[in-house]
Image (cartoon, rainbow, N blue to C red; front, top):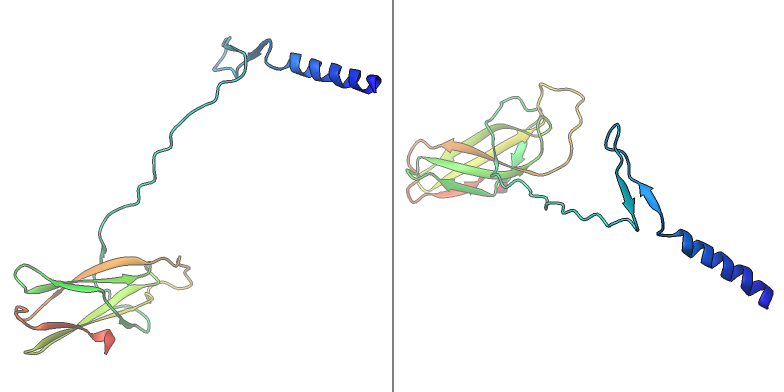
Amino acid sequence: MRRIATPLLTGTLLLAMGCGTGSVTAPSAGPGSTATETGPSQPVSHTVPPRVEPTQGPKPTKPTGDADNPRKIRWLTAKPSKDRRSLRVVWWSGVEPCHVLDRVAVKETARKVTVTLWEGPSSKVQNVACIEIAIQKVTTVKLKKPLGARKVVDGARR
């Protein structure tokens, strides 16, 4: 048993003696650099700033009138302006040119205002690939008469 322990002990001592001694040349910063480092390397500490997502509001969008086979799209909110002569309509959509606002239909009666958004792929672009992510969009709709006490209704929910 003594014969096995001696080579093992000798190898361990040689390995231990070789670690952490002498000087190591650091990567050169340029010609003529003589930077050296003694002892074990120092850990590098750095802080990565947190990723900040954009906090912009919905993307302003105007009707293009050129969508292929447009369909009704439900909207989230329709908030009146201060003078109540227009509505700020917000909805979820996709990226252009695969999802463009074709038109906004507004039907006004004495009791309600029905706003219908029509959206589809642009007819101006062929064979295009779009990423599938949701984007909030907004458009402004002008009314013929101030909103007053009339109810605002989503035409896509009928």
